[in-house]
Length: 208
Image 1 (cartoon, rainbow, N blue to C red):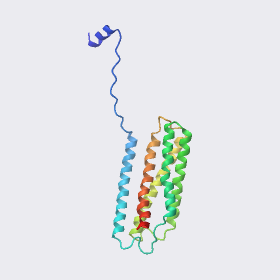
Image 2: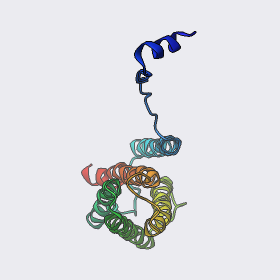
Image 3: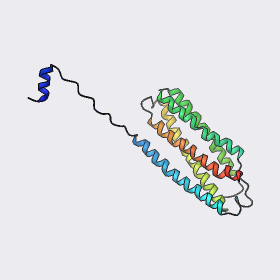
Image 4: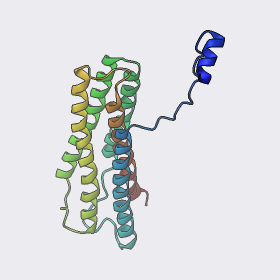
């Protein structure tokens, strides 16, 4: 007879199994995947901004003669719109954690429209420049950095369409919303990167 059988015979019932220690839950794989993407892209932008700083420090005149300083007022307004779009994304995440489908859709749409306005403004701004991307080192750096960031904003908008489509299809609830969280990471990253790009390429040139 085992110890277990003896305990049953003596007590007349089976003692409750002692609770097992809870294991720490790691972040989902999708979260780590997005963080890997963000880290890699952040290193790319850091390298480009460092190269821009080196070119600027080495040049006798920056921007080169004939190229005006980048416009800052209107660009600053649309920059605030882009960075500010992180707020409705955060509110969208909070809404779905509470199971509020309507608020999720509304905040996602608002963030999408804000970033779309930034894309339209950027395209119009490119058409108004008086230099091409191969004219000189400044032009190449300007187009490369701002163009790469604009591509990231467009990717965020495309991803946002997919997230919104699932939101309208009631694919998310208070228990299933990992896609919204992972998408939010990328969205916040795009806005954060622009803070550094705007500070380096626009604001710094007017504070020299």
